Image (cartoon, rainbow, N blue to C red; front, side):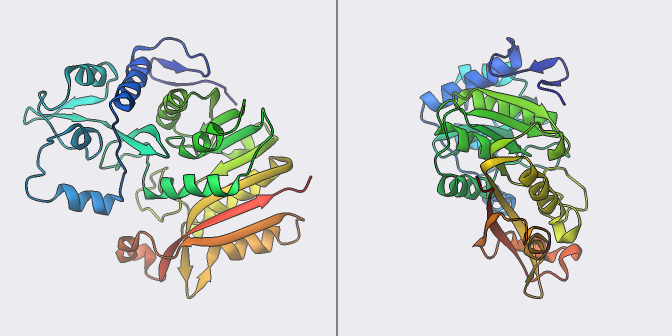
Length: 328
């Protein structure tokens, strides 16, 4: 297990990272955008495609078009200081038609800003943030309660870090760990956490078992789709995409301190009226002496994916929330 991570030539460690031109530029970008009141709410990929497919949306006309809708732009569309920070942050590409395009997006969740991958998120190491992230953040705030000062919080499969950052922002002197298998996710989530003013550690981990517990709060939002391309941020494995959700919950419960809590947000396939994840959780945790609360948060999400062959037996995909508390 490591407490540092790196992209090529980019070593990062929080809370006191070494000076790095790319990290510092992207952090300055977030601070500048926040100072200017920038806000953008990220929609589903299907909605995004519909909006930018409208007539007149071929090129960006505003900063939100550039950093939210990922539209190509001419250099006169954004302020010169923003353009320079994008260049220094290596978050800009030149298109064959001569226009520029940002390779990152900036979205707002619960009044703080997050860097994540530009649209479309087709790369295997894409860092995704979308409607699920907003629902996850709201669910955490509603369910976590107050933690003791100095509580240990981990966001496993952190991605852009929405879950862990949301949890830690309101908890005094909390110790936040951001864990992910994807170095790009750790790079961006660490910047997002520093921008939010949080002391934190970023750890490369391929399974929750690689983490050093115990934790007072374990939050996680696993991939839950059946993805033929096997993209890490999207593919949830077998059980109609629920395998990672099941495995991360079982491993996370083992890492809870007495009185600790696990909060999961995920999607689950409903097959012939059966919730395939709930069936497995009931079978494996039913007599574990834990306080378990599980319910649907949204009965119908990502309906466009039901057209895919892998979903031929699925009648709907539901967003679910799970809270598990270990007795003191």
